[in-house]
Every structure is written in structure tokens, then in C-alpha cells.
Length: 467
Image (cartoon, rainbow, N blue to C red; front, side):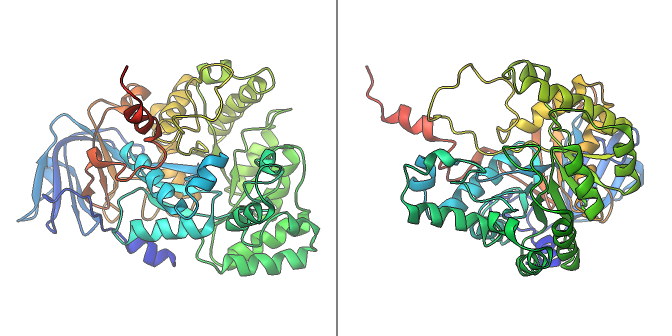
């Protein structure tokens, strides 16, 4: 699917019928457009055919005849939130992988609906099964299903699929080899660990073929997933991957954890460094931060709360301590930091009980972005900057800022109406009154429409005999 065709898809089967085909106008709102200026009281936002056609103070905006007018007096309007790094099919437990085989696209749609319900109008899936992400994206863009707008990469180039040393190797003794092969190929599409044995030219040729698929961007492994210090690809191979992605007109991001991984990805010309804040042994030096700014490289970061950090193991707690230092330094240094969560659907019935109760879980889709915004607040990040980290910075990193990220004439009419001021306290992002995507109000009460994962506990409770 081309970028043009993707951006043109704006229909919603669950949009409120009151809006119809007429323009929609929100009136008497407090406008926070995300561009950095002061909020505008008694503002009006007019949208038509999916885009914003007029916006500003009431005296400066003419509402077109025939428009549907919705009075949201005293409510706050912000741009639709975005997540730079999600995994809409993150349910890698063997039960889900086998029970819902053939329905992964349904799980992805469910995840996209949970994201939309909580104010995320656009998400970027950076690792998942290509055929199912493609099918879910088509269903949402074509109007068959409502959900957050999906951009996806498919596999992380250089990593294997879910049943592998990179992710869940414990299933190797449980699942049959043909099942393992099916699952891994659904994710890798010929871009797995076998590429680590290839020459740079061979890698470039393979990724040129992969980039010709209708993935929206590329993501590759500069560092390992479990072994953070492992350098997955040579400099020459990284150069070839980035060249192939850019040649196809797509942004390219690198999975990084070490300072050498960050440097090699920047030298290759990567546009985005995914969770570059997670550098376990050391924090990022000022020289690298300055180079990121000079090269206009974005960082997809994982802000967490103090409570989440304190709840981690002795091994992970110092990693998140470094992350918090890195995020603050990256923001203060002028890097385009983008909010991300690694989020997926949190299964309400975990296969095994956690060692201790989870706190402020960053990967819980529909909750993680709220915790991330709270984490930024706890770091002392300016509230407007925090909003931009969750909106325009993400759009800018993916080179989509002409269409998304702020509330301006000509951009897609993606916005969230809040009951309370998000610039006063991060907790107010939860006070969602209304979500609008591409100019259409979303019926949040109906989401998710056909849950497979998020309703599992309710199904079990309903089937249990009453004592």
C-alpha cells in the first residue's frame, strides 16, 4: 500500500452517525494545538472530509452552513496521541499462538481499537506478523473496522520470529518443528537471523526485495534483543539496509542498546533509534546527543514512572535509572524524542502469576502511554514538550508531520477532547470525553467490538458456577 493510499483512507463504520457527510464543528473548546503556543479559549475547530478546514478563536472562524455543531464548552482539545513503538500482536504465549492461529489479524484489530479508545489515533507497529498487520491495516483503512491508524514494519530485520532465541525459545521443546517454522516465517518473511551470515551486498539485495513490500517503514537490529551489547550487523550491512529502505522511500529505524550500536546506526544514516534510552551500562554522552541533533536522528524512548522503576528487579532497576537520565538529557539536548511503550494487549489471565504485583506497566496497551506521560511529568519535562513527545515529535520522526501531529488547517482531523487540562497534570490525559479520527467521532463504548484477548477473564468469570 502506498503512503498516498494509506493517508486517504478515512472511513469508519462505528463513527457517530450524527456527523454524517456534513462538516463537523467543535465549539467553545479550549484549544491546545500542540504547536507550542498558549491554549486558546472559546475556540472552534471545523473539519470536513477528514481534515481540519478552519481552527482558532470563535471570532476568527466561520462555521459553514449545514455543519454539525457540537458544543464542548470548557473541554480541552489536543491532537490525537501517537505511539512510536507498539506491538499489536504481543501475545506470544503458546495458548494464544495456537488457539487463535488464523485470527492474528483479529487480535491486531482488537489492539488498535484499545489504542483508539484511549486517545491514540495513530500507532506504529515495529515488530509483528506481516500478513496479519497488512490485513488489519486494510480492514481499518477500508472502513470495515474502526481502530487506530496503523503503520507497520513487519519483522525486525536480523531477528527471528516469536519461537526463537531472540524471543520465546522455551517453546522449542513444546511445539512441533512445523508449527515453529510456520510461526517464525509469519514474522520474518525472509529477514531473520540468516541475514547475519550474508555479505553486505547480499543483505542489501534481500532488504531491497523486502522494502518493496507494502510495509510502511523498516526496522533492523543494530544490537541484540536479549544480549544488549551484541552487534547484530556489520557497519557495511547496516549501510546497505538503510540504503535499501531509503531507496524505497521509507524511514529506517534501528533497534539499539549500546553506545556502539547507536553510533553505527547513525553512521549508517538511520532516521530513528528505537529505545536508545535503554543503555544498561552507561548513559549517553553529550557528544552522541549533539550528533543526533546535528543529523536529525530521532529517539523512540520508553519513559516509565518512578513506581515502575522501583518495582523492577535488581538487574532491571538500574537500566531504567539510566533510561530516565538519558531521556531527560536527550530532551534537554534538543533531540526529537518520541513516546513509545512497546505496548500490546495485556492478557487478563497470565500463564503464570508474576513474582510481585505489576505497577504502572509500560507495555499494557491502552495504559502504557498514560504511564509514559506521567513518567515525563515526574522527570520535570515541560508539559507542552511532553504533549509534543506524544504527538508531533512522533509524526516528525516518521516524516508524517505534514499530515499529523498538530491541530492545523490542512492536517488530518485527529484529536482528543478531554474534561481536564493535560498541561496542568499528566493524569488528565485519562479524562477522555471524545475521540475524533479523520473528522469522525468514534463511539468509544463499542470498543473493542469483537475482543479475543482483553475479554478472557470476563468469559472465564461468566462461565464459572455460582457458589
